[in-house]
Amino acid sequence: MIKLTARQEQILNLIKDAIENTGFPPTRAEIANELGFKSANAAEEHLQALARKGAIEIAAGTSRGIRLLGVHAEPSASKIPASLMISLPLIGRVAAGSPMLAQENLETSYSVDPALFSTKPDYLLKVRGESMRDAGIMDGDLLAVKKVDSAKNGQIVVARIGNDVTVKRYRKTGSLIELLPENPDFKIIKVDPEADEFALEGLAVGLMRSWH
Image (cartoon, one colour):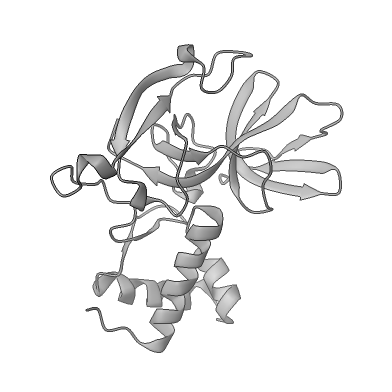
């Protein structure tokens, strides 16, 4: 049993809530803002303490590179009964105009433990590009996606604009939808639902790495 201070427990719960609500952990700045710290460095110190105690793992180089140990780890097939595994199709490049789960978009399928995710995903999407780098989502990663037709502000979504499919953070103000990158090298995509051909293809509920 890991022994945590009250503040460490508070931060761990904050991380868990963020992952449950948005699919991804908070940034240091968000933790500092939520808990009233004067700087992100104070949050970093608590995160390092949590890492030393084995409660989390910190990935270098990304602002959201925080993982609850065991939550995003690759499952061991020997420990999980086959009857409890679910099969998820892997979507590669999406053909223009085709439904997300159309046969021509499917590369393969993976058997995974549904307990890895707060919400059961419907498919895996192979991430392309670096636009979500600072959310810890890298080129080639497998994003676990739940099919939805609506999202809350701040959630990471898979969206289709015309024939392009993209992974971005969702924000809606009035009738304007903005798709926000997590990399300053990329621009915000502004969508007018009445003028643009736009659809939500799903909500990110987790991430898997080293399966590709």
